[in-house]
Length: 442
Image 1 (spheres, rainbow, N blue to C red):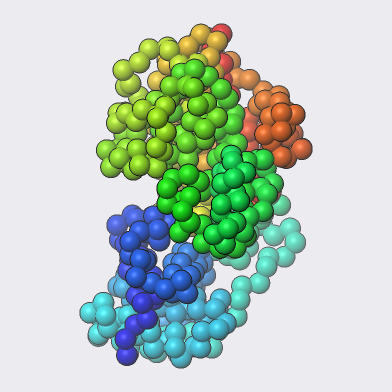
Image 2: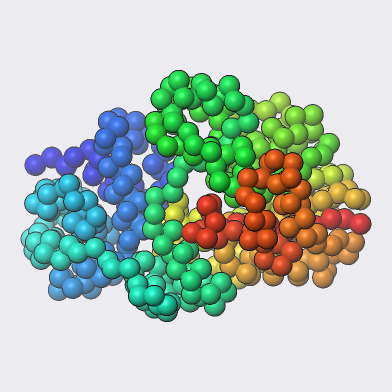
């Protein structure tokens, strides 16, 4: 029996994610899927993202039906089991026998024939335990939230402590949902062009220029292929709006380029320097942001060849990404507590260097898509203690200005802030989890 194309590609992607630290979202937009039909692309995406979102739940089901410890199974066998069990639980239209047979074939395809009887036996038992997980009881603690929503306990414990149990549950629940595809569209004619190609749009909830894809294939639209429309979460777009307008702008950690493109669109007369340390990502940045006023520089943001000459600077730093788990679920299984401390030191170095490029009277936006305090307020406050001449502005005032000017669609600006900073939370706000601080040089 041949393995279906969708399951074959999903298996290969999941194996790369597990063994090579690859990111599923990038692989799902690669040429690996070019030969798949629209239906098979959808099934492949469902399997990859579903297995990653619910990994701990799937492993628990394997553990109850297996004579071997899950961690000691070969990666290929473990993934074939996860793929089948995900289908048992979440894909009602797939017959159990088909899921079993295809996963057995995946094990054969991976040259693990000795594990075929074991795989078949485990899946026959697991097919009888295909109930969906129940929502946690009202007022559930971190342990129950972690089990019900398939999250690492240590992460959920941090969110309960930092944001409270209700917000933590909203975050976990949102992480398990398929996120909407959001676009940045500044041109009504472009919106009409997309509609003519079958892409149905709805207004964003946070930012006026955001549109949600309701139906249609935007990835194959002419505008997307010609880099005239950008997929961008509303919180990411809001961070770009906070940067404001200037004559010389510096984007310190620019790839993949969504915020850079937004800055170029909002500042068509400005000179914008977009910095990326990795050459291959810098090349992709040049392709994705084809604006004439953007110069891409391959360099380390901590040692740039500039002085204090930019009136607007964006330091959107590399981070843990815990505010983006709905779109990047593999992060929650890769991340370790020690990683957060390491990221803090790197982020602090980038911010301190970036402050050195802000002209007198200029502003810097420090941002991350992390929910962890060590990567956010703690970085800003430590930098302000060691770099003189800067102060944190109250982001709420700037959000009110954006609302009054018509750029911000969300009326309750106070709900978007925590202290003087921007703080969005998945499930609480209609966007990913972003932090931003607005710093001004005296």
